[in-house]
Amino acid sequence: MDKYVCDACGWVYDPAKGDPDHGVAPGTAFVDLPDDWTCPECGVGKDSFSKQE
Amino acid sequence: MNNIGKAIKISDKVYWVGAVDWTVRDFHGYQTSRGTTYNAYLIMADKITLVDTVKAPFKDELLSRISSVVNPSEIDYIISNHSEMDHSGCLPEMIEIIKPEKVFASAMGQKALESHFRIGSKITPVKTGDSVSLGNMNISFIETKMLHWPDSMVSYLKEEQILFSQDGFGMHLAVDRIFDDENSWDIIEEETEKYFANILMPYSNLILKLLASLKEMNLPIKLVAPDHGPIWRSNFGKIAGLYGKWSEHRPVPRAIVVYDTMWNSTALMAKAVGEGLRETGIEFKILPMGQSHRSDVATEVLRSSAMIVGSPTLNNNIFPTMADVLTYIKGLRPANMIGASFGSYGWSGESVGLLNDFLKSMEIEVVGEGVKAKYVPTEADLKACFEQGKLVGEKLKAKIGK
Image (cartoon, rainbow over all chains, first blue to last red; front, side):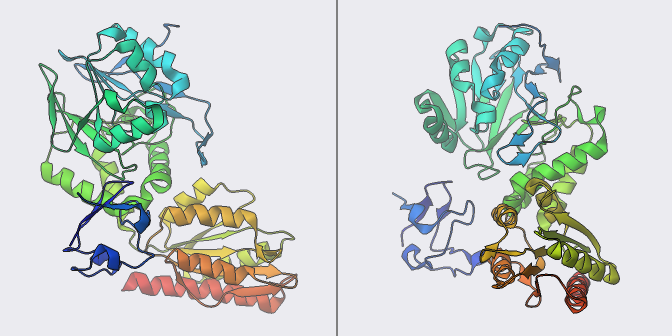
């Protein structure tokens, strides 16, 4: 599964880790994150993330 | 250029060369009642290094202070720890004047400086753990992303044991004495707390991580030199302890009642809520928004674990000052709070529901449905407000007891 980088702050979403502090279980693909999920560090929405090359 | 201002020596080879802004009272919506300073530092190493610059209108003050130690053109390196314009505003001009060999910033700093001033190509990016030799000294970098911007980093000068902490551990306070212990502790604590509440509170989790990693690194630190306010020489341990406490947001027996009023009805309700809180022994403060600044409310939020909000209904909405303060506080992401709402109305009465929605959107646990009073509160309405204050107080006490 692909990692995604926050364009605003550089934080990396790693699907292997998920975002357990915000109810996202490890193993959740980026595309499967809820629409209202936001970057845990800077608060921007999903549309501000880019696939890590 | 005037040459009145002089540098202040802060250690063997390091000088404060910043600017004091005695005038500013509105710092992007933050009321800076005591002014501020924009700190910059000059390291007189083999490679002469300037750490941060100042807000654009203060360039001459910076140049004057630098010139009292060395001709600015002799500076070899500039470090930009933070791209916000109060520290980078005159960076492009300083680069023109100094023509430094290198300008260092984080990778995100490089991007931000490009977006601000189109000078990205002049920046050498550095990352956590990188160290730059200044000849007889070494400076290393720790990125502190989102504390409080994506670009933020701090720099550590090993030989002089100085941590240049950019906005971290800073405060808006204009001073003539540059060290913490030369100023009133009460004022320093108050302004540091206000700064934390208004700038750093949303990133409390990151602060806890940073404090832990600083502890782990166990750097010997003689001075912590922030970009605003006095330099920490004697009380850094104390302030780091307070940062830890503020970041944890443990429940405390203190509440605030934040309201505005049109014909004094919601004001009467606020006082009754306060009396209910008093009954439970919970300390409280009432903040009328006609007379309070949002940035002071932020400080009170940091000090409290319950927020009870009141607004009249105005044209099917909440009162604009309440929308202002709640929008501001929501952005600061208060944590671990309980809340409730009240308000008067004439005919439609949407305010209480809207306030409850606002509180919920801030992840504040809402107690009760809220109290409404038509036009002017009756004795029964005021009793309901009193009971609401009491209920919130009891809930808070129960939460603390857990």
